[in-house]
Length: 403
Ligand code: HSE
Image: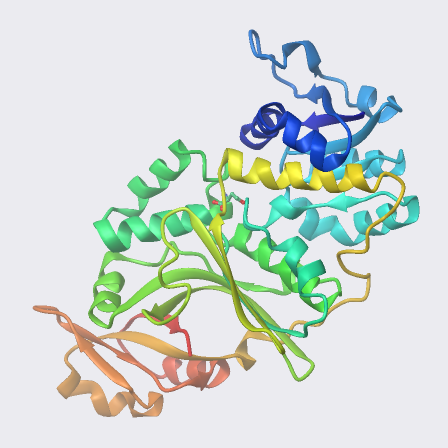
């Protein structure tokens, strides 16, 4: 038998307790032994809850109990999660986490301690919720050179953008609904400003390159600038707008960014709607492979945590190679990347189109009764685009368009 402690009994932590109970037999069979929940650590009380008898408020009980072999961290954030997780690994326990902020900020060090201690630090649930993506990258695609990853990695923003796109909802109402459904982070800024996606693409890029990726090197833009009018233009062009976290690994150059991206109907991510996530991975031998599913929410995320618990239970005294090294991966500047650009300007096309020639317009779009129009540019390096757009008057909005 192996004992588990859950640190943080919020949405995900309570989901993990539920999965361990509901799938008890299946989990025991897969792990080759019973997996028992021994402690739940939380500051709060949960009167009448089935875990009440296991509830503790003092972390040192977990740290010092040699009968706890696997610790699940579902507290979120860095304080005190980082100190607790580090202490658990140093005490010779396996740690499973759903906390992308922790993995993106301290993954290198925590992976290193796990290797030294011959224990496992596992984080399948930190990216894509219930979608298998970390393990496929580290095992199934082990023989591939990963050339590109493009992901819709945040359920909350995808839910909001889908409501705006398909049902004309206002941004604030859609955000409130996402929070009510338990998708959003406590601080919605992490979702809507792209920080959550940034941590996730940093983790995926580190998995793909095998080197440490500093999330602060990743250019990040959220969705708060995107308006109903932008969606009207997108609709007219047969496109949608998604928040994409992407990385490209070509000819030794690695780029990574988080941006709202216009994509057309042929793009495999176009149909990824609502709270779902989708991750398109391009390998040099495999070509494209798409991972799709529930990217947020209590039980899907808890399901990924449960799989990591089983993995740890199956390798009690051995570190299974995964993750990345301490070598730092350089991320090339955003300006060196190439996109097409959607540019909304004031006026009418016949008055202004000559001013826009530097963008090599491939498409001109107008909306009824509006004293503005938009173009989609030729593919341009971001440096060149920025220089040209600075010279232009009456720019209302620019959005990158997938090449
Ligand atoms: N707030 C995150 C999302 C939760 O909406 O995707 C899962 O990481």
